Image (cartoon, rainbow over all chains, first blue to last red; front, side, top):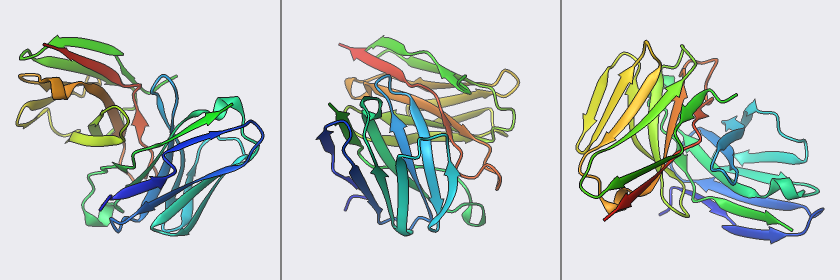
Amino acid sequence: DTAVSQTPKYLVTQMGNDKSIKCEQNLGHDTMYWYKQDSKKFLKIMFSYNNKELIINETVPNRFSPKSPDKAHLNLHINSLELGDSAVYFCASSQDSIRLGFTGELFFGEGSRLTVL
Amino acid sequence: GEDVEQSLFLSVREGDSSVINCTYTDSSSTYLYWYKQEPGAGLQLLTYIFSNMDMKQDQRLTVLLNKKDKHLSLRIADTQTGDSAIYFCAETAGTTDSWGKFQFGAGTQVVVTP
């Protein structure tokens, strides 16, 4: 079973469209993340949820809206897509932390490559 | 600017040792990591080190930490073609306030040649 799975793996769409990427983890982790990896491979955090509560919200256009229906799922919805949104989006999860002995390991999904034309 | 910096590219011959370097700026960094990304895949944790350690060895991997210079390195002994990948350095303070805030470097592309 895949620990962190995200769909779709590839997404090609036109500028101005709205799209969603879904993520699920079956590791029982409390914290989930969305990272954006640009064409130069630089990885930047976008959002993080801990037990369905938003804990990190970096400087991201408000066209991006995360939603966490439960602690095993974190979806990313993007409105009015722009060319600059083309990237690989990675979902990740980690165990909640300090009580359990923190290693901080992030478990990543395989990525969703978004191409905006 | 970036808080974690790495050289972008390393070419190494099969069987040689690879050394990937990383520098960070946050003096409160407590946990430091090396992740590996193979083509078309997500990142996978290779190893990590706590800031109260100078060295950690795990089979072919040796991590060295110079806390004074804020310098982290990963040495891969007897490099194999399967080691070709992008290697990311990452850090976090690991405190309640910094929870979930991992800073990643831009990644070092390692190419292993026969």
